[in-house]
Image (cartoon, rainbow, N blue to C red; front, top):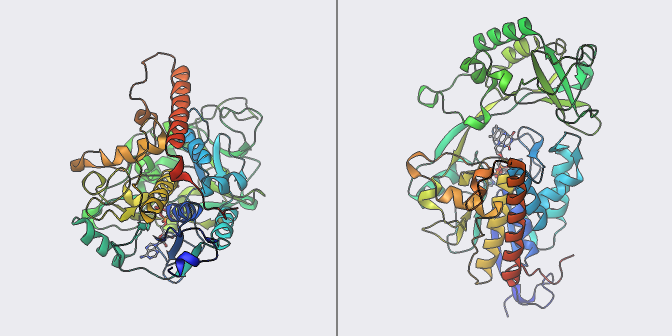
Length: 460
Ligand SMILES: Cc1cc2nc3c(=O)[nH]c(=O)nc-3n(C[C@H](O)[C@H](O)[C@H](O)COP(=O)(O)OP(=O)(O)OC[C@H]3O[C@@H](n4cnc5c(N)ncnc54)[C@H](O)[C@@H]3O)c2cc1C
């Protein structure tokens, strides 16, 4: 018997072996938890805080680098369907998000510090997970390994991954929004209201009349951005454009985007303002607020100057300014299977943003799948592809079946779940049908693959 066959956590049961997970971000934390839950020993590597990325601020696991919102939680919207499925399969990170939720209308927003602490407690307290601190610079392709090192993978490891996939990374720019202190806000001007949820005060709103809006836009366009290299100019992700880029696209583009006033009447006038800047609570106490949709690459001094023109933010105290970073991801249609295994090295799986999915919950979902499949490889079983009728299967299917000539990062969206759904005019009915169908297909899949989901007997 090997040492691992006799190990204490396995309590005499055959030991399924060890899975290595690199990166304790969103995807890696979920992958490590899932593989351990299914009975594997997990070596979890994280380089922070010794080696930091340009976007992280702490050494905590599952740090949210920008917004504290994990997106819509309505079970009839694509993002809500994905969350519902992750709840069903016992995702640690969605459990942590539910436990540390802050009011944010239909969005699942969290207290970011408590969220990371919750994840950290679960991982550190798990007898099957061994934490290793340090930067990983090499990959053992002979053992089940999940690479979940994110869009800001360290350079040395990125070079190794490049060698494995035999191709360069694709990239785009993503930016983070500023955070301000509640005590610095002018509540004589700012009012509380939630879109589509009358009577709820989850968001604070800064109203702009037409002249204020036009002056603000003009200054935003003129403001000085942080420098980028010429060849990198303009490669933004359409789903997360910097606010100054939106301003450039047209006079009203911001008003139809993050500054949309619809459903947010000012209680003092009873009318919707010309535009509204929304602030979302960062913690349950409401001591910090983030500026919704204000990801930016302006120089910090310019952010203070221009954002202070927003009514109610004249004296705003900025605890964090917006920043922009180059996000790398692989050309998934060329190098990945829907199981998230590398085509050339099937013991190595990718998870998170580096696979070409975009968004916190999408990263968590691929972390869960990679953790499941790495555990199956560890047990000598075949990795699984999930049905494309459910969001957990549609997402990896869509990245791996994309067009490699023009592969763009993918968010979960209803379009991925539409195949075979009858065309009807009533979208609510259609969405309900999609939501039901995804839940049923996941249940069927779990029932058919029961033995793959068998948990370690000593699991709490
Ligand atoms: C600036 C920015 C803002 C973003 N804002 C949002 C947003 O508001 N909403 C949203 O939904 N998504 C956002 N994203 C996209 C994406 O959802 C997040 O980046 C998300 O954290 C990615 O999850 P992940 O698990 O793939 O990577 P991460 O959460 O970044 O985790 C990767 C981990 O790997 C570690 N690591 C890297 N290299 C090594 C190594 N060699 N050895 C050991 N450890 C290593 C890192 O330290 C990190 O902890 C943003 C991305 C960026 C860069």
